[in-house]
Amino acid sequence: MTRIPLDTKSTCGTPDGAHAPDAALGEIFTDEPEVILACLENTGAGSPPSASAVYRTALRAVHEHPTRADLLYCTARAAAEARELETAVQLLDRAIKVNPTYRDALVLAARIAHDRGQAASARVYADRALDAGADYPDVHTLSGRIWENAGDSYRARAAYRRALELNPNLPDTRAAMNALEESRQQP
Image (cartoon, rainbow, N blue to C red; front, top):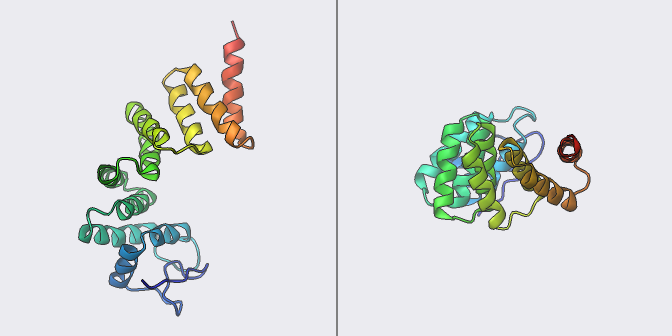
C-alpha cells in the first residue's frame, strides 16, 4: 500500500506533487478510501480536482469493489460534496446494508435526509447512529433539530442537553436549547 502525501498545493497528488491520473487515483482510493475524504477537504487549494472529479473517480472504484462499506461511505461523501445527493443516498444505503452499524454512514444519511426535509428517514438514521454508539455533540444536535422540527420539544431539549454536556462550546446548540426553554415558559 503506497501512502500518498497530501499537501495544501496538491490535493490528491503523487509523491512528486503532480496529480495522479484517474486510474492511479482510483487504485489509491480503493486501497485507502480515507484519501477520498482528504481530497474533498482540499478541493479549494491550488489547482486540485473538483469535488465532482473526486466523486467520479471514487465512483469508478466503487464499481470495482461494490461491497466495501468504507469505500461506499467515502464515495457517498464525495457525491454529497458534488451535490449528487440521490447517488450519495444510494451509496449510503449500500454501505449501511454491508455494515448496519456504520456510524459515519448513518450520520451522513441522517444529515442528508434532514436537509432534504425527510423527517422520518432522518429520525431513523439518527437514532440508529446513536444506537451504534455515535455519542458525538454534532449527532445529538442534529437529533435535536430533527425532534424540534417534528414538534417534540421534550426530546429535542434532551438531545440538545446531551450535546452541550459533551461540548458546552456550541453556540448554535445553546441558542436552540434556550429558545426551546423560553417557549416552554411562555403561557
